[in-house]
Amino acid sequence: MAGSSVPPLSRPQLAEARRVRAVELFEEGASNAEIARAVGVCSESVRRWRRVWEEEGASALRRRAATGRPPKLDDDQVETVRAALERGARAHGFEADLWTLERVGVVVDRVTGVSLSRASVWRLLTGRLGWSLQRPERRAREREESEIARWIAHEWPRIKKGR
Figure 1 (cartoon, rainbow, N blue to C red):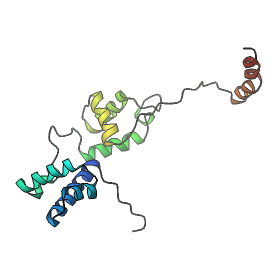
Figure 2 (spheres, one colour):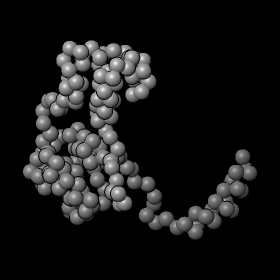
Figure 3 (cartoon, rainbow, N blue to C red):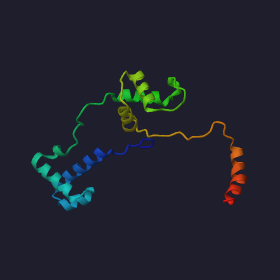
Figure 4 (cartoon, rainbow, N blue to C red):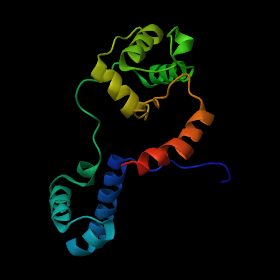
């Protein structure tokens, strides 16, 4: 379809797809070596999958729901946070348009009522929002590009020769 795009499979989805394909090949009578080559894994993985399949069936090779504590923010809240952060730090009353973990935590608390630790804010930004660490370029405010160019063209060669 024009204009539509299918997102790539996540690692867990890709792993499950390999196991599902392996089950299809088990049922066709393929050897472990053939299956390993076909799905791109080592033969030890195929032996382990075959043992599970024989003892517990194909459903045992399906992905299971994540265990552990559920996230504090649901998907709708994460999207609310994303929209709030995309407006910029100044829109939330911060002096500079720069995000820190503390500032993001304040905004999360304001828009969702949920208080997160610094580590949880980091996981939210990198894991659930897919953002990465960005450091601003350090530059002097009173920077004169023409003076810098002149210095590089005239002064720097003179200093360099004086070694």
